[in-house]
Length: 269
Image 1 (cartoon, rainbow, N blue to C red):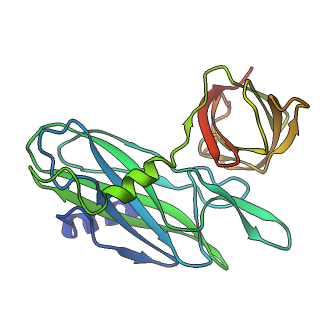
Image 2: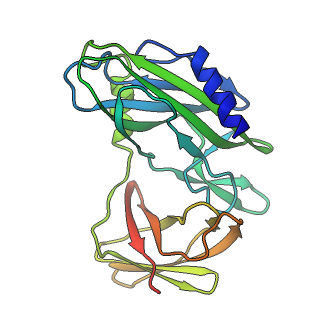
């Protein structure tokens, strides 16, 4: 709570009024907010983005870091003229943290932009998006941090700003939706067993977001002979007290070459 209050105070004194906020540099990484549009106008939806630029040798974690790492959290406190917002995560990679042991995490080791779709409450009125991010970053050592960002759009402005191409490019990196019923999820002790069927698979991998408190390690993959299905077994690596007693559903991210698909799946009782 104290960290959030400090971030709110920073937002109160350091807003930006442009299609890009100023860069904020932290250890191993810099951040800023960008916008596709230069003003609100009559638009029913605006596209913002959280631009993350890790330094060489550093890794920034995905929403579920996997075997190791720190789970990020994003809040939008005291934003103005914002009816709703949706943050999306571009497809991450499995990153080796310790070469000698093979310990890994899920995230990004190069610049990425997290698209944020924003619906304004009122047309032709200024809009301010405020964001507070708690994150983890790993270089030689891993650490956590918090950054507060704000970006204001005027009441009117051009359709496209300087960040249009950057944002639209990263929108294409957001995973597509996996067809309902494609995945079946069960628990076998501390192992999560996921069966994916109904599509041709080449060299698949699976990332699981089971919510705060549960981190699953790399999947062991059993691919069917016809490559039309696969079974993934993911060991539970860590749990914390914030993990709920039951696990009713999980978010799945299926990677296969340059293709990526995500879905929400219920866990069989």
